[in-house]
Amino acid sequence: GKIDDEATSKRLHEHLKALDERLKAAGSKDSIEVDRRALSLLEFLVERRAADQAQGAGPHVEAALSALKAAFKGEWRDGERALMARFLASVGKLVEKLRSEQLAQLRSLHDAAAKGSEERFEIAAHRAAALWAGERREEAILILGAALGEWKEARGGRLPQSANPRLSTYGSYLEQVGEYAAAEGLWRREIAIAENEAQRRWLEIQLFAACD
Image 1 (cartoon, rainbow, N blue to C red):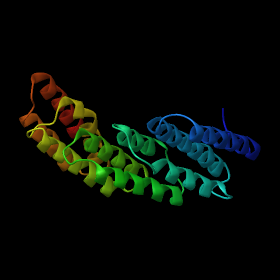
Image 2: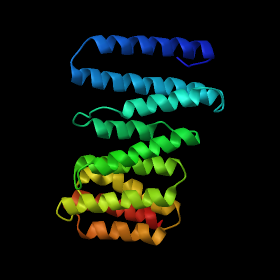
Image 3: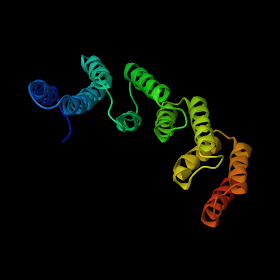
């Protein structure tokens, strides 16, 4: 349910603290790390919601920041970095202090991922989405464009069809900032190297929409 008042936020915080104490006393190291990260993220959501209701006033912003930093600590299991990036990109508009930490964590995740890996590609796309949501549009376009180029190079010069959603987002970003010629050029270049007829038809639809 919604967090409607300070009392509810306080009860949830106390419950999460109790769960954290239980995790310290039981379970394997790996499961504890994952569970504690999940609890920290839940605490972040609780405190962030309370901070929003208080319009950024009171102790909730600092509590949310502390929880977000705690969630980023510890070792990462396979696939967990990309999941964290997706979470960070999904939280919506944040106050400046939280947004700065969000973007710093996304940059760290992006920098740590192996160049040319699918994980790095996905993290870069989430980072771009967060930058776009934060009105840092030019930076979002640069990050996503570079990620698409890196992923294409790693795949032998052709993007797989699984990259279509990210490619579509990139084209949309270009159009929304008025870079219509760049968007048209993007689709024409991809059409020229389409791996099959289905992909070519999809790309032609994107080109038609961009030129409409």
